[in-house]
Image (cartoon, rainbow, N blue to C red):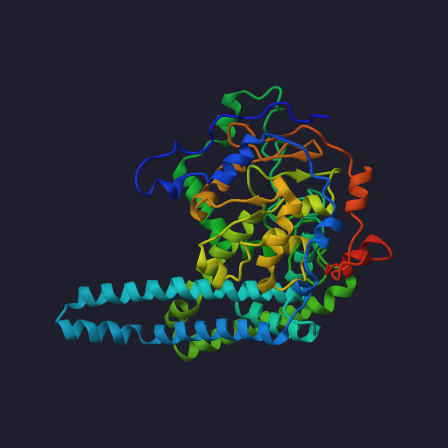
Length: 463
């Protein structure tokens, strides 16, 4: 049954410019190809077949190898810090050597600080991604190693380890399921008080949704730099099923089960200790010093974190599900992107490069996921989503085009500020048809079909 009767085919991006740098603001061929497949049929791919395509050795975790990656990353961050402590001295030395005045020395100093802020923010975001791996028990076969590393890495960037680990695992259990998913929950037509699709006119969309590019940029900056912390504090852009006052820092929050409360308290204590350390550091030196060395790169790191996590599932060509959801369909509602090229691969450990494979196999360590991606792509076929659109343009495209979804329909796509979608579901087989039943038999990470109920089998699969 077709639940959406109109597909917007009008170009929704800026007119493609010409010139040597035009590729920076142009949709990639993979994205254009998905748009051409505007008639979307939900996948019925078997999870068993996807598991069978992956060589067994890729499921193995090496504590020594993981410690090498964590140690290398931490060492680079320390080197960036040491560099920053010498910036003012270097600027004075260069200025005096060449006889430059105070304005020139100040310009050198600002340039060096900007260099530090960029690379340290990249390193901080990488620490967060390594902590994310620990939350999935993906770095070591020993749970205590994952906990110690994850607590240290996430606490350093002011992320409550246990609290976020719990809700992030819930995200994996219900990715792009409108009833279950935890983050980046889309607005519906009703949320925005738009008329029904059959009655809405172009003027309705213009009056309610249109905004100036400057205001859009302002909202985007707030979301990028503060959005993740606001989500942790009061569930901003989280699932609306939770009541007001929901917080990752509240042990009694509906986000958690009663047996989780002690873990939330431990996370809170760890964050409290980190904040106390920052206060003492500011007192011993100065707040200005801590602001430059820690908080500026910390804020920029949040920008990177929001950027790659948002782009993993928020795209005009990727569906959201209601009753038609299955685990495989949720995993396939994910986009692999070569975010910032080698920087994303080296410093962010491929968290955006191989995210589809990660959603199928959460306990496989990140350093094995490139091979997993190669192994499963033939099985996934056209349902494997990859997009090489330049990252910042892709971010702007999703932020401006992923405006709302329809409040009804088992399979829905984002619509833009003109009420147009680039894809529409033309066939919605129920989630309990014969093929999806076979597909949704959970499989343990060693490839053997699990026993027991769904929760037990998700646990065996790493969830």
